[in-house]
Structures are given as structure tokens and as C-alpha cells.
Length: 443
Ligand code: S3P
Figure 1 (cartoon, rainbow, N blue to C red):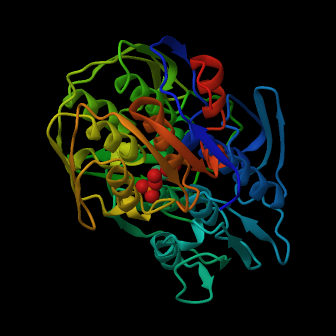
Figure 2 (cartoon, rainbow, N blue to C red):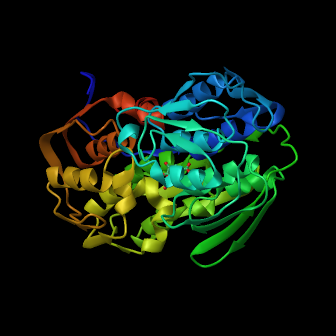
């Protein structure tokens, strides 16, 4: 914990705003990693400039990839598939990012030297066996043997084999790890994946990387193999709905306000939050839909309402809202009735144990919850109005906890002291600037 903190003492005043949020994190990281494997100069507009994305850039630079960042553009000079400049004793720091830590491994599977991957305190407590196991099966070695967490060293091989991989958690990182591994593996990789965000599939399609997908109700069967070569490609990255979600919540939890979020990624595999909130009585509409670089984008319009009601959330929506549950819990706290969210053990495996901490924060502000290892019941209070002092610390600097608490303070009231506010730079560096400059909030 650092000694820096944020003080929030006033609710946001009613508003009617148009807003753009920072670029999508999943797409930004995937573009960097795949562009590094292409041949030639690729350019991205509106690449997210968050700590997670900067970690990806630093890792790639250590592997000999040239990357420059200017005003609204990122330029990367790809060296082709497995074109990294391998050296002895390389250490890659994935920082706080599970996506960077897990996906970078899948591009190192031919490394002739051991490469050590490290991360911050939060990332070092997270499970890596979920990607180590399939990569082991493909023929890659990890040291120390049997270790499931960072720091870990990877040693590639020239004798790689394709696998049939069953992804049962609904984890896009695990699925993507095996997909990316197919770039360096002969033959056809087969992935039987529980549904999860499909940015990698869309990018493979867009880049003409061989991919076949058959979609069932609950699982997708994905077959990928290596292209002869990967051509450079430019991208225009839409706003991140996971960042937009905090402002959707700000609107729903305020009175007489409305908001239009412009140019947001509206990939259907990310729209769980909109589906859940509509079921809870929220007034949300999307418009100006277009396809950009294979991704569906558009605007989101949301209005505040006093008719929010509880939800028995279908587990089938979990994966498509996995990064939004903290803010959904906050909305459930002000909704009429008892909300129930289940099969969510994955939430405790994020940057912090979010199911547990989310519940603890709700209890702190007087909201009753019933918590198990994989579910939560939230007893909503539509009249919630806080006037005490609240301190948020020791939350493993989880960016989404920080943003959740800021929104709680701005809508429920009370005097909040939130430590480590720089944690938000992990995913949404403009968060506080938008609140101050656009919403006139004094924090
Ligand atoms: C991500 C997948 C999700 C999500 C993370 C980003 C991705 O993680 O929580 O923020 O870009 O693939 P899991 O794959 O572990 O569910």
C-alpha cells in the first residue's frame, strides 16, 4: 500500500453527457502480440495506454521488437512468426496483467533459452497452471517443474505437437494461449472451449490465419493452424465496455441523469453487463452499430431510473460479464429485492478475490450479503444513502475495486478515503480525469 489516497466526499450532480472511454484492453494486448508476429509496420489508433498494455510493450521490446508510441498512434515493426531476438537471461515483467503474462508464454514456445516471466504481487498469486498444462502438452518445458505461479521460466522446443484442448472455465486467456501457440506448432490445434470473449477468433479471421469455428450452445469447437506468414495490419481500437461500465453504473445510480458512450466495443461476447442490467430494469439502448476490423462497435445510451430490481443471474452470462461483476454488485445493492449470482468461483481468481472483497465492501456500507466460494446473495436497499466514513485499503491494488468504490462514493454518499488510486491506471488511465473534467467531480 502506498501513502497516496483519494478523498471523495460529494455525490455527482445530475448530468447529461456524451463520453468516450479509453481503448479496449483485450483488443489492445492482442493487437500488440499478433502485430509483433507479423511482417512489417503495423499501426494502431486509440491503443489503450494503461499499465497492462505498457507491460505488453515492454515485454515485446525486450524480445527485440521495435515499438513507438506517439500522440494517438502506436507503431510496431513486426519480425514475423517467432521473429523474436532471443538472448540468454531475459526476464519479462507482466506487471499486474494476467492476459499479458499468460499470452506472452504462448509466443515463446520455440525459445532456445529459458525466459523468466515475473509479475507484481497480485499476479504472482494467480494460477498459471491453466496455461502451463496445455503448453506442456504441446512440448514446452517450465521451470521450476510443477510450479503453478509466477515467477516461472519457459524453455521452448523445436519438437512441438498440436493438441486437443478442453477449456472448461470459460477463460478467453486459456483459449487464446492455445490459439496463439498454433502459430508455431505444425498441424491443427483443436480447442473445445466453453464460451468466452472471442476477440482472438475475430482477429485470426481478420488476418486470414487458418481458423474454423463450429458454435454449439455452450461450447465452441475451434481449429487453428499456422499461416505461411502473417501480414502487417492496422487497427482502430474502440472503447472498452469494461471501462464504460463504471459510467453506466454512475448514471443508473444517480438521479435524473443520462449518458451516451460513443464508439464502444459491442462484441456480443462482452455484452453480459447490458443483458444483466436490462433484466434489472435499466433503460439501455445501443445505436450506430458498425463493424470495425472485424469487431462490432457502436454507442450506448443509458438513463437513470428508480425502478431497478433484483436479478437471479443466469450463470450462462458469467463469462460475458466477468470483469463487470463488481460494478453489477454495486447496482444490485441499490436494487429492490435479493439478487443472486452463482458459479462465480473464477471471480476470486482475478487481480484480487473479487467475490470476497466485493461482498466485504457491500457489508461495510450496510448491505447484507450471503457469500459462498462461488456465489453471492445481495439484499438490495433502494434507499441506500451513506453518511459515515469509509476507508478502502489492502485490496491488492485491484483497479476495478478502486473504480467500484469511487462510483459508490459518488452515488451513495459518505466520506470515502480510497488508498492506491493509481491502481486504476492498470486498465483505465483517464478514469479520474473524466470524472473531474467532464462531470465536475471534486476528488
Ligand atoms: C481477458 C479475459 C478474462 C478477463 C481479463 C481479460 C482477455 O480473463 O477477466 O480481464 O483479454 O482474454 P479470463 O480469461 O481469465 O476469464
